[in-house]
Structures are given as structure tokens and as C-alpha cells.
Length: 104
Image 1 (cartoon, one colour):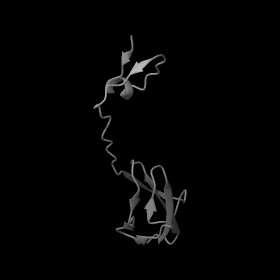
Image 2: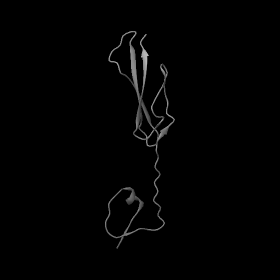
Image 3: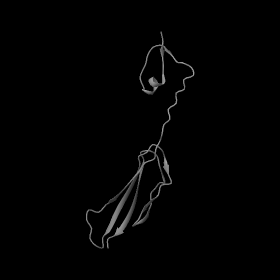
Image 4: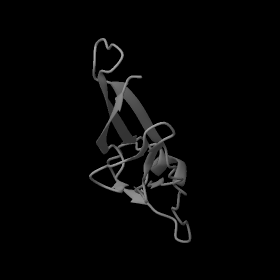
């Protein structure tokens, strides 16, 4: 007697051994939804500053989603556009940009 293999068995990633009867007409499709998620952090590089000092900022952009994100640009409202080395990030990739500001 064989075992009928069902979608729920395949989806659960179970391991089977033996003789199997796969019913024709069963389609195994699972819709995978990929979402985009970017994280951007601005971090000052100086421990302490005084008036007239230059503060260096580092901008870290990480793709925390499940799909490639392209057309990335970072604009700081106070410092303007931040240059990144790439304008597209694959899932898990990150890039860093830098900018400076004189304390007034």
C-alpha cells in the first residue's frame, strides 16, 4: 500500500521514504510575497563637539526586505543629498554614505 502525497506534506518539508503514489492533477504552487524594507540610520562620528567644529555623519542604508530595491537616494533635510556608492541593494545588502556639518 502506497502513501498519497499531499500538498500539506510537501509544504511541511517532511522527509519521507518508501513507495509513494502521487496523484495527478495536484498542482504545487505557493505564492511567495516579497516585501521591500529599507532601514536608514544616521550616526554622528564625533564623540563631542563645540561651536565651530565639524560633525561627520555616517548614513547606513540596509535592505531588510526580500526583494532588490533600486533607485535608492538619501536626502538629509539639513545637509542635502547623501552620496551612496550604489543605488540598488539586494536583500541583506547595505551601503554607507557620509556628510559633514559645521556646528554654529
